[in-house]
Length: 315
Ligand SMILES: NC(=O)c1ccc[n+]([C@@H]2O[C@H](COP(=O)([O-])OP(=O)(O)OC[C@H]3O[C@@H](n4cnc5c(N)ncnc54)[C@H](O)[C@@H]3O)[C@@H](O)[C@H]2O)c1
Ligand SMILES: CC(C)(CO)[C@@H](O)C(=O)[O-]
Image 1 (cartoon, rainbow, N blue to C red):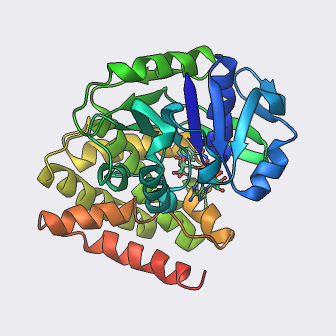
Image 2: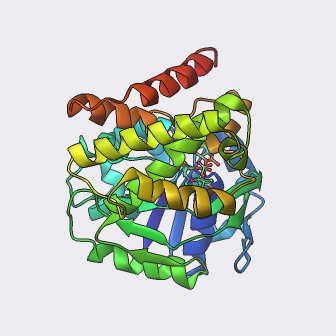
């Protein structure tokens, strides 16, 4: 099985190492800086078993024109969501690198990340994943698995047959990180959206970790309003979650989800600290887009979104 990994970052390196451990042929598309570091080999460290591979175990490309024709069975999209326009355009322009029936799997936070790819590829060619395993990259060629809550879920937001993803879920699991296919991926992605949209931007704006946001009535009031608006959007757009009412979600949010991740500083906070564009368009930005489409009040999400965009305006 030949796999192209788009984005050799924290998730990309970890999944690349996982797939190599299962005898897949892995190619990374990477920036020149990362490609240079990948000449030293790659490692997956942290929780679960450790994996280490020499540079002759994989290929690295920095130019689409060098990718071999008629090669890849799967493309794993492991970049930040801001790169989706670029990656989908490039995959379309260089379709000849894909084998007949090749599948794209998007391992990103947020909702609707398949949309840029669906401009060019069919519904049964573009899949998504829900990842709540944490990864960090202490060095450009090393990925550390830092936390793990639930299996990596693979599925479709377009109702496509997901049996084709089974070998991938099995290989990720056999590599040591639990993974499953799931018919209701939208439910799980919306659950992750509720969590990330409530916590990430507010934590970034206030410069605090997740836990701190639950320690005063003012930030709690903002998060509750964000959660309410997202529930209304989910309903209006015809999706659902495992909770009927915002209050049911808020109960588990304050009693379990946030305490379990109390010390975490959101990826939005980390992006802003590095002065790089955040994934806000795929998080609260997607809530706003759907809210406007279905005529749902999303004014608090819009205010939070506008603050993040104002901060980013200088990057
Ligand atoms: N790290 C985590 O713990 C975690 C957990 C769950 C979900 N996610 C999601 O996974 C995605 C990737 O996160 P990450 O932490 O691995 O990010 P990262 O910044 O470590 O890695 C992203 C990589 O993509 C590369 N890239 C940038 N533009 C590109 C382009 N146009 N084409 C190809 N590659 C490009 C970057 O050079 C970088 O190496 C994000 O959507 C994130 O929200 C991350
Ligand atoms: C789990 C996590 C690290 C990635 O989805 C998230 O909470 C974030 O965005 O920081």
